[in-house]
Image 1 (cartoon, rainbow, N blue to C red):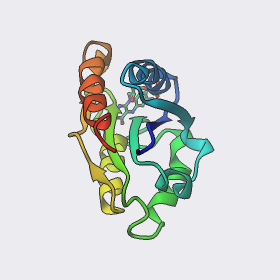
Image 2 (cartoon, protein in one colour):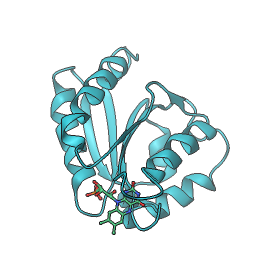
Image 3 (cartoon, rainbow, N blue to C red):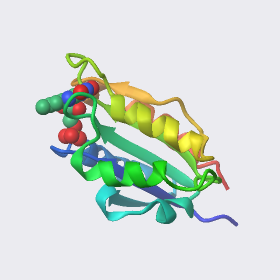
Length: 151
Ligand SMILES: Cc1cc2nc3c(=O)[nH]c(=O)nc-3n(C[C@H](O)[C@H](O)[C@H](O)COP(=O)(O)O)c2cc1C
């Protein structure tokens, strides 16, 4: 029997992505998945590589930049070995604002670096605008439905 663990990491400046990660943990419990919600500042690429199920929640700041708590982890993943994310089944929920030129840029970067490093994308990324509350839950539910089947 495989484990039932789910890793939820967030990159945030004002808490929106963190709140979605926390909500996802509650939703995941109904699928018999045990979540760990972790700040991107508190985890390393090696820590992530041991997980089979991962959802990334990340906003974008500045002009298409990573949130402060996400930058070091993003750089570390970029500099890691090519297959460090092999066996990690992931989905990315990106938060942003279409008023900005580089809409959801950080989430796009996470989505591509995780694949580049050997991870398996199990759900197309969703890029959410300021009305994200109306749309996040559907994507999260669909993603959990897929992740719960992974042994
Ligand atoms: C100063 C500032 C810069 C921002 N820059 C971008 C940006 O370049 N691209 C984007 O898509 N959203 C941008 N946003 C929107 C945020 O990503 C959005 O408000 C998000 O919901 C914040 O989530 P968080 O609380 O998890 O950080 C910016 C917001 C602010 C206030």
